[in-house]
Image 1 (cartoon, one colour):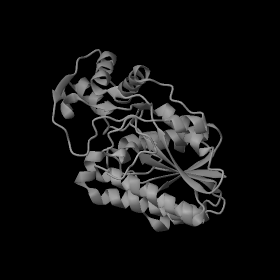
Image 2 (cartoon, one colour):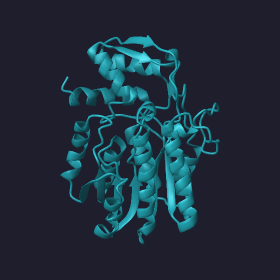
Image 3 (cartoon, rainbow, N blue to C red):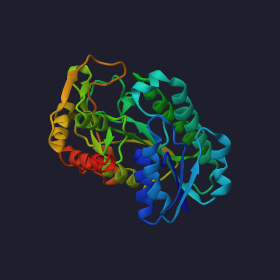
Length: 322
């Protein structure tokens, strides 16, 4: 039996696939190398996976019905799915909304159709996002909170994924779990996310632009913790047919000014910071309530930013040959 991992050349996808292979699982990986950011990083993430026994790769778009539904015939042993492929990020969803609907909504629907056609499927795990909490002012964000007021198209597409999965679970008895990932960072992280952007600016001596006049806090969650949480959830499907949603985050909100200070220390260089007004769709603070996740799966994050940021900078320097 094997696990299908979509978005396998992505940040979380590559690490999840690697962890599955390390414990002896067979993995079928799918990715289309979208140009949301430089695909060179995606190829680099994929290289060690393709050199590992038990890994099979298919270059395809998750919204391509023929290619994805054809996996049922070519890889009949698929018994679990970790669907991580997505067009991510708040700002870009306002620039190209069509690709967000195509990848995040149509792509998710295609994966649900694939899932319901796999007779041996044990569990369908997929990526949602902390962005679904939208204008929620209550902190930390809990799964029981209302999520009916998204403030970005990206958030709306991820909430749509949750609702579609709820429907498929009800109609077809699909065992499914959605994971609301909070800000994930670490080695091999995305270059369009703040740790990488800040690190690059500090190294190059360029200003860091901070929205909301610098009054921003994020639940920075280290990649190793997020992978461990994903696998813990994957290994424990619902006892009966059903759909669940959980938060995966550090349960600790970090002031971005403090994160920048940690980057300055790791680079031994001062940052140039420019304060900017708020941006549409940007939340001033995020924090995860993970009580349900810890209780159900025995998972707790272990790596604090004081440890994680230096590890990220070490990788950043090595990857960019600094």
